[in-house]
Length: 506
Image (cartoon, rainbow, N blue to C red; front, top):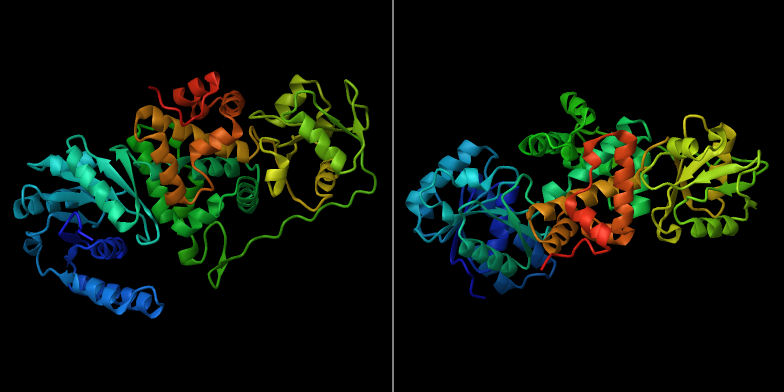
């Protein structure tokens, strides 16, 4: 294979630099490793040799490939030895002044046509390039860790980046076997920006004492199919990494409410309770395994009350069928009897609001989240209101657990848990498209590959229905009075017209 870049320099040989070097060598480039820390480049070379030897031992590389890859790596004793490179990628500390000084020096060493690339995850590419004489030759080239396994790469154009530079990096990424996505130079680029809604909204749910960390994690995994719950994920990435990113993107967007961080993570970071790597985060860890609290037992109810369903319930026909399947007595009158368990199924509103507006007996009223088809979820979620009687709560819990499906009972919340978290994710993604940060297709691909979501945010919105997402957001804004939930124009217009959230104007 003829590599697009014959000779590639890697500056910074930590985990990211090593991963990029591995992919560059496997793509056919000669790779020069440089690090200011004595012995670091040599250690990286040995580590990569060990990686390839392991792949050879497993039968994934033959003898010839092993020798070829190892032969493409060498250590550069000084920055000046990178002069022959036609691409230099930096993976050094996330400090603007350090990166600016590095590229200013590199610019004097390499050819005027050489491409300079920064693996920054949080700094402005335009700012990094600002001090260069040839800013058009510098682009963002953001990989994810571990590089060989995380098969998406963000190619970011700064304000003055040449289109041909981005095209070369895009084509080179494909030579790795990775998927390139194009992003504008905005805070968080695509993946880190699109990921804002999952953790920050879950933190708001926890902060309102709607449910504990474990329950929120279980709900989002079982209802929407996320691989990790938001608190499991924050424990894995560690708050000393994730909280500064939350704050950085929030501040860079001039305190945009959609990205507002949480005092919960700020406090835990200050206390050193940052996650799995220190043995304690949102969960405690023993032998690297999270100690999850047990789920509450299903209550034993001697006599089940009849059930009355609000005429305004979402998926009302499906809810009736579910109740029939569960073998309960259903009331069909225009109003509930004095003994009935009253069910509402709101989109975005809380149970309290519906009980008040519909003049229902709040002591017997609970909500059920029917945003998704019940058959498509592994868990049902019920919500009480401040007046709900314990016997009615227990009856509803026991009823909806009759067929063995998991049930979580949470406190009142506009949008339960899944509705509000998913709607926030979809809304942020829609606004990224509105801003022109990337194409809808690149956004969904980047998030699916980069964050491991079960589907892209726009695909989530289309699955739920853009009009339903709009209703959830409008109602959440009513409940909370927070501009955080204002719908993006991209979402509002496509929802109003019945268009897919991936639809681009001609």
